[in-house]
Amino acid sequence: MKLFLDTTVQMDRYLGKQKTKKKIRKKINQSTSSTASNYVLGEYKWTIVKDAKILLNLLRSSNSIDEALNRLPPYKKGRTERVTKKILGPVMEELRNSYPNRPMSELKEALQERVEYFLNYLLDYYFWVRIDRGSFVKSPECKDAVIEPSTSEKLSCPLTKPPPCDIEDFWNSHKKELEALANNLPRAQKKFKSAAASILKNPKKSHGKKCRHILGDAIIATQCPKGYRVFTTNTGDFQPICQVIGKSPPIGLK
Image 1 (cartoon, rainbow, N blue to C red):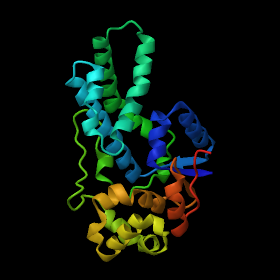
Image 2 (cartoon, rainbow, N blue to C red; image 1 turned 135 degrees about the vertical axis):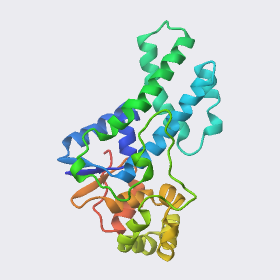
Image 3 (cartoon, rainbow, N blue to C red; image 1 turned 90 degrees about the vertical axis):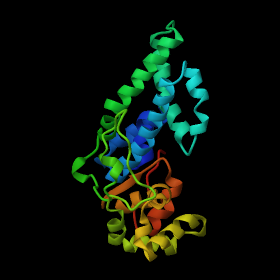
Image 4 (tube, one colour; image 1 turned 30 degrees about the vertical axis):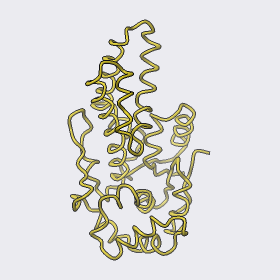
């Protein structure tokens, strides 16, 4: 079995709960090949790097870990709080077990150093473990995918401007799938249908929120290589998409 790893799997195999991580790694280890795409890499960096940087900036400008966490809610948009806690939780547990009597001020400094190391060195490494680079899908060439993760580099996807990527060319090459999304998805998937129909009328509307927030799963399903199946923790959203565009059913954790 060949697996095409979506963004949720790429994130949760390192930052998820222990039970989830074990299930993901077991399926990947049992696969004959596992791969992903530039788009998945872009989503992965856009989500985790953004959240890790928020956490790091809060730690740097706060007197304690508790103060940093109390200042987190204003930044809570989408998955920010959840992902930040995924980053924070395992590191905090490790530090507290290793240094049970360490003063909280030193613990904050140690946590800050770990988040910096995570951003500068581990994040990119984690993504590529067990990825078959020969089957790696390059289009659409997400701008965020080429940014090296670090504590200083900014992510650069211009959600409100024409994109410096090939998302328009991608959908022009996959009009059949786009038409299926616009016409054949069930009514419950209204926002996906509407976004796909909008791009069919005007390809220049394919960037921004339609790419990042609405049709992300559709892009991943569409670009899944022949012979592979989408591996996701979110089979509910992928199931109807894969069905209408003629892809094999997605594989979940069970």
